[in-house]
Amino acid sequence: MADTVTVRRGGSYLTIPAGAIDRYIAKGYDVVDENDNIIQSGVPNDVNALKIAYNQHESEIESLKAENAKLKQEISELKNQAQKVIKSVEKVVEVENASTAPTKSRRGRKSE
Image (cartoon, rainbow, N blue to C red; front, side, top):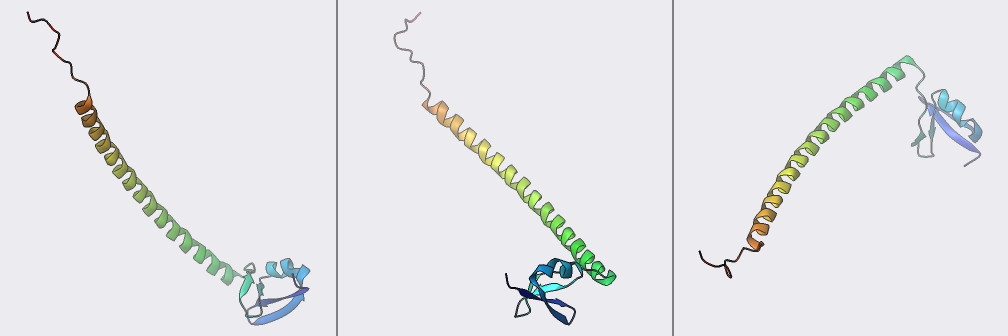
């Protein structure tokens, strides 16, 4: 890790010692690289930022709940399809077993 890093909050940039990253993240600063890409996000520390983060998380939770319900439905449908296939295979096996089962011969039996 470099001796110094750049942090950003709003339009403000600071160059800080690498050992101070945690303090600045707690204050809401993002750690950025030389191209202004966020390397590590800061903790939101004002009410508006917290509301935005809360709404984003709520939206993501709802989206994930919907996806989860959809996937559960797909799993249920796949289980039903698998059960139908298993039953079909079992019937085929029964028919094959019945057709290949040895039949009793009447030979050697005395007539009455």
